[in-house]
Image 1 (cartoon, rainbow, N blue to C red):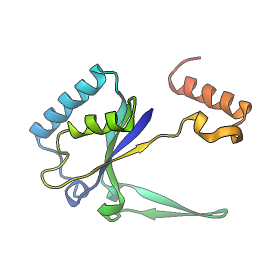
Image 2 (cartoon, one colour; image 1 turned 180 degrees about the vertical axis):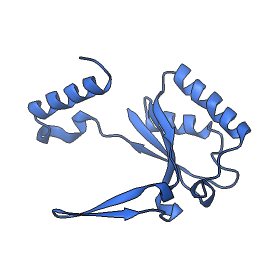
Image 3 (cartoon, rainbow, N blue to C red; image 1 turned 45 degrees about the vertical axis):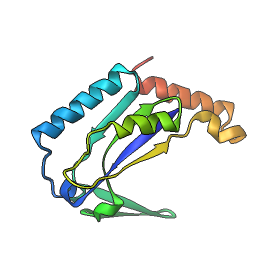
Length: 140
């Protein structure tokens, strides 16, 4: 099972203040543990929303909205983790250093797998998905 662990943004992360060296070191050690255990598939921190935009869709229309946005709506970073269960993912995230000096929150959401879509995900669509995953992984 794959999960996205979403680090919720705070006023601190949205300010653009860089993490302290001790936090970066602690996160580095935690990421090393995840990789060594074969759990971490990816993860990154994100720049503040002031450096981003949103694209709003309305039928065929598109509207680009410049940041910044309210921190309560945002993510500051994420991990993609592969574990046997939601509970196993929760146990890993509970071991994470606190991403910020004060209160913070990490949300965990399961990622859809091909089999989750049922019959609507035809053999043709499955083959397309497999080709795309192979190309992303750098396989011919």
